[in-house]
Length: 231
Image 1 (tube, helix red, strand yellow):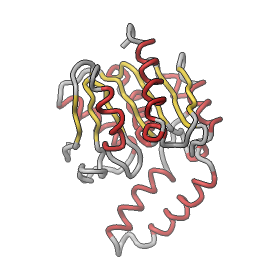
Image 2: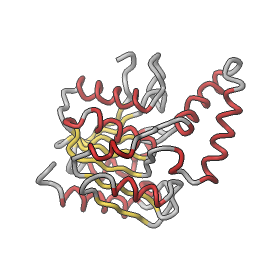
Image 3: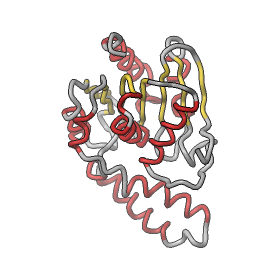
Image 4: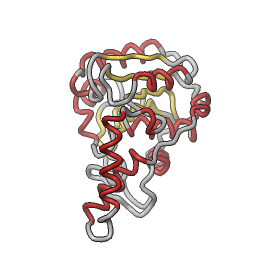
């Protein structure tokens, strides 16, 4: 790998990987790291170009982030893990399990989307405008280039074919907020196309892991307990 992914690790047992959203870092899961480390080996990662992880020279894409995760697991000889992804982290998780199915024992998708059609227009339109503006200044400003790359992930990614969701065979929890930036119909579509997945809609917005941590954590505990024989 051209970079070294920064990560926080706590606990012992089955590896439990946390993937944050666009523009965030591993600290997003501060209300989950301690909680789940009582029973799992929690590893919260800063993805490429986020938090304390360098940008590196490889492409800044969801696909690359999934490949980065694969290399990260290989380096640590982790053969299989539970993966929890939030927002773009959920998109990375979907790409990862499709490409490396044998390395995932269970999947938790929080606020993910297949494409931009899944995002509410009042959220997506300002993102599209911001992307167009930053593209005009990338040759003059490093800050603009950085912002353009982040916005690009929300304008031109993740482009996941719904048919590919049928490839996901591991226990899966699809979870989102009642007032999420992702359309509820889109969240339900993801769940409906992953065989045997569980859908959970919690009262709250896109950031339920922080703002509704107790309910969020409890839903995950119930899901993991229900599927412990498979994990």
